[in-house]
Image (cartoon, rainbow, N blue to C red):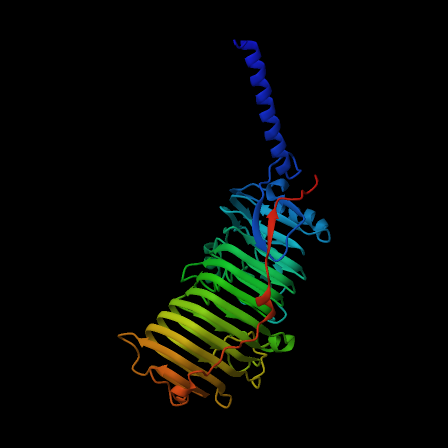
Length: 484
C-alpha cells in the first residue's frame, strides 16, 4: 500500500495539533489565573494551608538585585488581605534577588521563598519604617529614640508563616554595622524578622545572612515554631543574635544551625523597670537540636533583659563549637524579675571559654530610673548529661550578695580542660546548689551528693503544647487569585 504525501502531511498536522491542545490544556491547569503566567505547584509543610496564591512578580516585583521591591511587597500583601477570612493567602517569591525595605505581614498568610530566592535588605534608610520603642524596654537598644522596623514585620496577627525551601534573607548588615559603630544611626538597627502581639507563628526552612542586628525576634507572642533555620553572620558582627524569644509563651526552636557575633539563642522578657511594669514572662520554651558557633557569646543566654521573668525552659541535644559559653544567665541589681525552672541536658561542647556562666553583675541599664531594690530571683537551674572538651574554665558562677542564686543542680558532667586552662576551674560566689558526678570537682558551694544521686536534675516529662503540633502538607499554587 502506497502512502500519499498529502495524506501523510494531514495526519502529521492532526497529531501535531492534538499534541499542542494537550500541552495547552496542561498549561491552563497550572495557570495562576493572572496574565497567563504559569505558577508551578509544589508541596511544603506548614501549620495551615492557604486557599489563594500569588507571585510577587504579579505586583511588579523585579528580581534583579537592583530594583526596589518595597512597593511590590506592600501592594501584594494589601491585595491579599481580602482573603484573610476566605481561606488565607500565600505570596511566593521565586528565584532571583529581590531588593526591599521593610514591609508588614497580615493574618492567615504565608510568605514563601523558593530555592535561590534572596530577599536583599535595602541600604536606603528611607525604605525602613520607624517604630516606637518596645513598651517592655522603654527605649531602643542602640539609641534612646525609636527603632527601624524589621525587614519582615507584623503586629496583632494570628496564623502567620514565613517559610521556604531554603530561600535566603540577606540583611546586608555591613552597612548597618559600620554606621552603628560610627554612631551615625538615629534609631535602633532593624532585625530580619520580628512579630509582635501575635499567635500561631511558623518560621522555617530559611537561611538568614548578615542581619543588621538580631535575626529572629518574636515578642509578646504565643504558639511559635522556629524550625530548620540556618543563621550566618561574621563572628565579629555586633549584636547579631540568632533567635530571641522575648516575652513569649509556648515556643519551640529546633533543628537550627547558627554562626553569630552574639548569643545563638537569647531568651528575654524586658528591661529593668519597663520589663517589671509590663510583666510578661517568657515561659514554656523548648530548644532542641541546636548547633552554635559564637566565639564571643553564649550558645543559650537567659537575659540580660529578663525583668518580666523567664521560666520553664527546656533545652536538649545541643552542640556548641568554639563558643564562649554553653549556658549563660545574665542579670543584675535593678533587673527584678526571675529566671527559674531551667533544664538543659545532652549538651556537647568543644573549645569553650566557660561551660557554665552565671552573673549577677551585668550592667547596661535602660536608664537611671531603675529600682536599686529590684533584685532578681534565680533558682531551679538544672544541667545534666554533658560533655565538654578543650575548656579554659569549667564555670564562673557569681550570684548577688544578699540575693544568692539558689537550687542549682549539675549532674553527670565531664569537662576536659585545655592545656593552658585556668588553675582554678570553678569560681563560685553567692550561689547554692548540689552536684553529682561532675569532673573536675566543683567548688565547695556545690557539694557532691555521691554516685547514688546520678538521677538528679531531672528533665521534665510532661509535654508543652507546642510539642504536639502536627504540620499539614500544603500544595502551593491552587486555587487561583483572581485578576486585579
